[in-house]
Structures are given as C-alpha cells and as structure tokens.
Length: 508
Image (cartoon, rainbow, N blue to C red; front, side):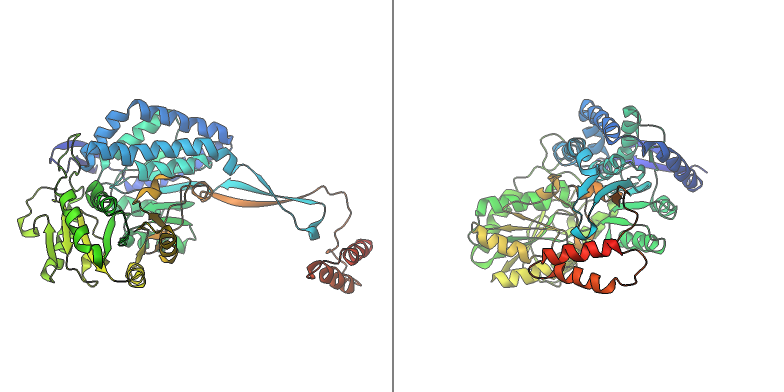
C-alpha cells in the first residue's frame, strides 16, 4: 500500500503536493545501490567529484528564487530568511568545499621520529562507504545539503532522509541532484517519517549524520553503538545570551531580538536565555520591547517573522509560556496562550520575572519566546549559563573584550560569539557542534570533511636494508637499546652515544 506525505503550507494551510513515501522494503535496495555506486564514485579523483558540486551550485543559483519560494511554502518562514539563512550558507558551503577539499583530503606527509630513520610517513583519507544523513525541518535545505556534499566530496555515497515535516523541500533537493547529473545512486533520497528513518538507521550504514532532537538522537546513537557505526549528532540548544552593563545596549537589544525571533525562534542556536546585568535590566527590557513591537509578522517579502512550521512544536511553545505565567512570570510583550488562535503564527513573546526552575528557562523552547533574567555578578551568570544540559552556542556582550574572552573561555559551549549572535554557523572555516546534550562531533571546517573519511596511516621504507634493529633476534640487544633510549630521551640528547648504540644494533 502506497503511503503519501502531504505537503502543506503551515502559514496558510494550503495543500501543496503529495509525495510518495519510501517503502520499508526499498531500504535494502537503497543500500545495495549505494554500495554498488560507491565502487566507482570512491575511485574518482577529488577534483572530478568537486566538478559535480560546482554544477550543483550552478543549478541552485539559476533556480534561486524558485528554491526560496519552495522553502517559504514548506516552512512558513519569510522569503528573506529562506535566502539569507538557508540558501546562502548552503552555497557558501559548496564554495568552501570546492576551494579547499582537494587540499584537505589529499595525502599528507607527516614527521617521522628519529628512531624510525630512513622511513617516510603519510596520512591518507579513505571514504567510509555509505553515509546516512537524516535532516530536520527548521532549515530543510542547509541542514540536509551541507552534510551530503561534505560526504560526497570525501568519496562516499549518500542516502538522505529529509524531514517529513517539509517534504516539498526534500523532493526539490532530490530533483536538484538529478538536474546536476550525479552518477546513478551516488545520492539517493528516501522520503518518509520516523519509521523510514528507523529502518534506514538499522540498515547498516557506514556512518550516520543526524540533525534533530535530543530524544531521537539518543535512539539513533543506541542503535549505532550496538553495531559500532560512527555518528555525528547535531542536537538541540538552550543558548545563553549574556549582556554586561558596559555593552552597546542598543546593539545588544537588537541582537537579542533577531537572535530570539529569527525563523520564529525555530533555531537550535536561538538566544533562548537572555541574562542582563541588573543595573541595565530595565533599560534593556524597554529597548527590546520597543524593537520587538516594530516587527512585521507575515509571509511576504517585507515580513520579519513567519509562522511556526511544525504543529507539535507550537504546542511545546504554548506549554512553556503557560507554565512560566502560572509560576509568576510576567508577559512583557505578546499575547497569553489562551488568546492564541488556530493558526501557526505566534506573536513574539517577551517574558520577565523568571526563575531558573521554569521550563522556559531550562528546556529547549524552539519558538518565538524571549525570557529575560537579571544577574548580579560575572560568576553568577557563568554558573547559570553552564547549568543547562545543553551547550551549543552562547553570546557575550560587553565593550571590555578582555572580559568577553575570559567569560567565553569559561562557558561550556561548542561556540561563543562576542557582541554577535548565531553567526558562527555561517563561517564554514569554523567547526560546528555542541557539548553535553547538544550533540556529538563537529562538522564544517576541515573536520567537516575528515569525519566522513577514515584516516589511514602509511609508513614507507624503500626496503634496501635486510633487517631492522628491533627485529629478531633479541640476543645481546638489550644493553644497546638501553643506551640508545637513554641517550635519545635524555634532557640533553647525547648524540654520539645515540649513534654508537644505533650502529651497534644494526650489526647485531
């Protein structure tokens, strides 16, 4: 029986398309086809593989407006965010990989210790095989395509399972790769929900790259661990945004508004906990309220904030806000949950008078909610920031850059921005990933290509000598080895003794 994924515009409720879900029985075939395609794809020169990525970039650029509209329709986000935060970083990732992948993944000569005289040492990068990429709905293009192209550049074949919440983007990605002309089955797209994802995870991939919730990440990691399948898990966040009294207050307030509400707050790196030094708390609150109430909510090109994308996520946001208000929080901006309508739009919410035990303070909200909390000292705010189970990103706002670096160094976080917010993910030369429940592993940067490869150590000897000093027989060698090592590892190397001991060992 054929199962259909229904693509619906969350902002309007409009039916967009019906997409056929991949049948469970096809999973084995997907892996067979991927392994067959791997035999040839993995033998291509890196430059040849990168040519396909260059073609993909051209397809994306030529169809950029159409691609943006597909993202807007499928997610409910505003057109500018589709361009700036989903398409642009994807294109920039292609540029970075095309420019640097050959150098990063080519064999490298490394140092050889003196005790291995006469040999040469290299590191080679060997593709892992079939990579399974499971991507989310909040940035359905970027968070699918970037790991896919990183794996492809390294010589792997890929099975992509895009989110069933945004199936139209998943289908468009599949069509883009087809237009690019990638060899058959080098990249395959499997459409469906968590059941299809579970079947693919159990299908023995050689590597799993997952972006999504902590709950699902734990399940995938458990399955992978039993089969010793390596993984990268990009999970959630509850990012602290720390404003000291000497910060540029207007910049910090505008940064907080964008950091909390961009993509309707559906960002793993959202500013979800705003900590403001007591002496400027009221001023900051007033500026943030003023800036928030200027925002335009809608779906056209002049809109600032779109709709929520996933109905279940709206319910989580509603629960967090309701819980906070019932426990004494104050609604500074926005409307209370009992006044929300059935649409997927949530008016941006600012909350004050918060306590650390409220869910909106410690659990990931993933919606347009900004909790603002006063702090007294640097030590206090660092403690509060680090108390979270998450550790993906953080931001520090101050004119004292020495203090900023000091605080950044003490935050348990995969990234920290200073007088900025969110943007570390846009720099593909920086590694991206989290600590604690925010995930395992890193991608982007050189590491983002190397994770999809085995590092192979090569030692080369020309083979002219008949033997090595450490080979059998051991008879009569102990004393010579003792002198050799004592002379070599001495605080001041004794080179004459070393050479005598080495030559003596060669003769034995």
